[in-house]
Image (cartoon, rainbow, N blue to C red):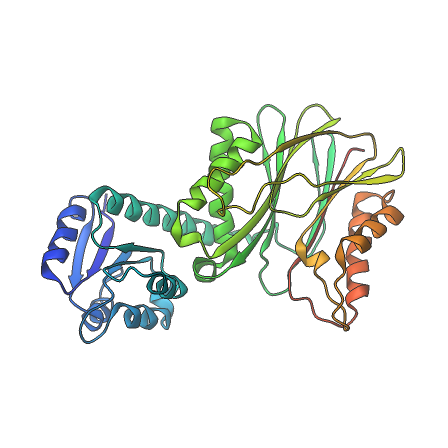
Length: 373
């Protein structure tokens, strides 16, 4: 099997040799002494990772990264700074360029190996998911309604992207025990999201979350482990993600939910004609290591509705600069809660569109309805 390759760009011969010694047993190493030499090499080779110093003669690390960003072939190459420049401003400048990690000299061998492996594994998932998404057209991210029957529940959602691609995603996992997991995620940020598009970052999140769920079973534990992983990965600190997930089990009366920084769930109780907000939630993913995410169990009645929206609904703005807001959404659900899920979804979307009038949307708009027929 061909070894993964790393280009080391470092003018200090002693530190360059140290990096080559620590990494050379596992990876194929090529080196350059400054940015200009690195760009010449990159005309002939395509490394799996670039590790660069910042302070170098002729062309420093910042200029090298800028040059790579301006070329389609090299823009998405995984890139790490290892440098003596350790101030917060230095680090912020590097991350703003879209690098994958930033380490300050001296670097312990185990830390180096761990961070390199993290970047390469993540890039592999991104690349695989990106090409799969190209082949499938990422069917869940479209403007048409999709109805899925899971374990006696009805799921209907629509995603209206504000741009060509959306940062809102819906995913369904089906398990052999007859249960299903439904997830709505909202991704916003820069850096790696811009490099690989939000769909590939979402693919990374859902893959890791799926693995955690298979290992631990409980939604709250799975979300907690995913949160800790993101907190530990400094390259993801500029990406903000909210996530809300639901377990639909064999018991048609029971929904278990965990909310990581997403908007509240609106619960339309059909038999009483009333509306409740389920507001218990944890923080956004990746902000607070060790954060607790409450797991909420709800017993729902026949024809009840769970309505979940993205922030593009509440933050829709009209020509006077007024926000649509939670109160208008609640009133719309009270008036139309008895509609079937598809009609309710469309009615809520139409209400937001009418409120906005001719004001263009500046965020994705998603409405999802889970119901028990």
